[in-house]
Structure formats: C-alpha cells, structure tokens
Amino acid sequence: MTCDIEPVIIACEPMSRSERLLDLIQTLRRHRRPVSGQRLAEESGVSLRTLYRDIATLQAQGADIEGEPGLGYILKPGFMLPPLMFSEDEIEALVLGARWVATRTDNELGQAANNLLAKIAAVLPDDLKPRIEGTNLMVAPAPASEPSHIDLAVIRKAIRNEHMLDITYLDAAGAASTRRIWPFVLGYFERVRVVAAWCALREDVRHFRTDRIVTLELTGIRYPRRKAVLLKEWRVEHNGIADTNTDKN
Image 1 (cartoon, rainbow, N blue to C red):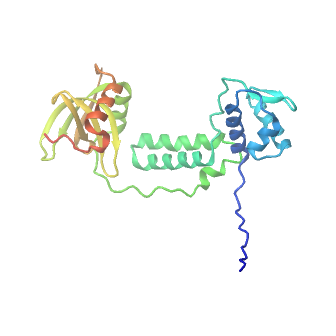
Image 2: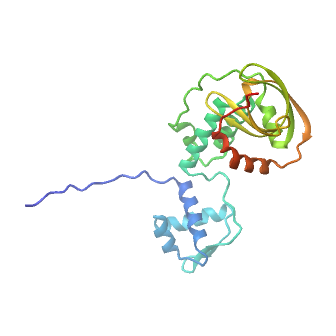
Image 3: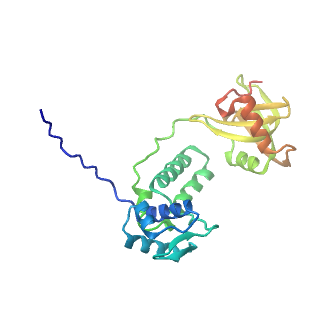
C-alpha cells in the first residue's frame, strides 16, 4: 500500500533589513577571529552579494568591521549597537509596555510613555516605523481604581532620590496617623497602588495603599540606608510586592 503525501510549504515573513543588520552584528560578535564572507552569508541566510552590501552599510554607520572579500571580516571590540536597532518583537514589547504605562500610572509618567513612543518613531529606520502604529497588541481599558488624593510623581521622586516622606495615613478602619517613611518601591496593581517603605513609627517595613494616604510631603532629607539594601531585604523577608498586606494600624 502506498501513501501520497502532499508537500507542505511554510511561508516565512521576510526579515526586515534592520533586523538583518542587527543579526549580522550579533553573528560577527560570536566570532573572535576573521570569518569569511561566505560563512557569514550562510549564517545570515543571504546571498554573498547582499552580505557585502550589508557590511558596507554597517561600516558607514560606524561599525568598526575590518576585512575585505577573500580575507574575512572581524568586528573590533567596543562597538555599541545603534540604540534604536530594535527587532520587531522588541518594538512590540516597547509599544505594549508604553501603552500600559500611559493608561495605568500617573499623568506625568503616562505622558512620558507617549513621548517615548514619539521619539522612537521619529528615529526608527524607515522599514520599522510602521511597526509602531501597526502593532495589533492593545491594552484593555484601565479598570476602575480607588481614588487617590496624592500625586504619585512625588512618591516616585522620593524613591529616585532616596528621600524620606511625611504622610498622613488612614488604616482600614479609617483612623488617621502621621508617619515618616522611607519609600523604596511603588507597586502598580490593577486597582490599587502600594508603596513599600520603612516606617519610622513601626521600625519595620510597611506597605501603604496610596488611596489611603491623605497628605504627602517631601522632606528633602536623605534616608540613612541605601535603597538597594532596603529592596534586597524586603524581597527576602516580605516575599516582594506579591505580599500585598498593608499597614493596618
């Protein structure tokens, strides 16, 4: 008995020129000795003529590639990739992340995310620019969150500068207390925002929901311990931001 098997042809989307140049740089980096153009062409999946043209393009962009046809090519150490030579997956990740930030964070950070996309789109290679607006990855509308009385940008600034904050905080029962905290993490959940901070009153790390912070004041005082140390201890002792227990008293 014989079986007729129909051949299956898989059509692959052609790689963009920018992606091909990025892959060529990565291929050259894997070789510490001169490698022939023929081998580079085979590894890149292009013709030898295209390979020579791509090397010339990279050299014109500043890549320190030494060699010539028949002798082989080598990328000298120290060359940094052009900062906007992104792959299509990387562009989609950037767009999706920026869209999430634009809808889930404070106004200042959201505007920064939109500005970031505009700057990337302005300097991307022409064959990659359509990927910014053309990506089909979308972010769902933000769910209704608890109203916040404070500007989260102030907390972000305090974390960045390792400065103490003076806050008035309401516990779960609505009782108010005055705290001096050393913030080192701001966590964005779907409906709430949580600050992880050393609390001078409790002499321990506490988690504060931002919707329960009534007043917030920058002290301009640098806290005595490094943010990186606080973060490391918090991850070990409190299981990271997954531990959503907030200060209750």
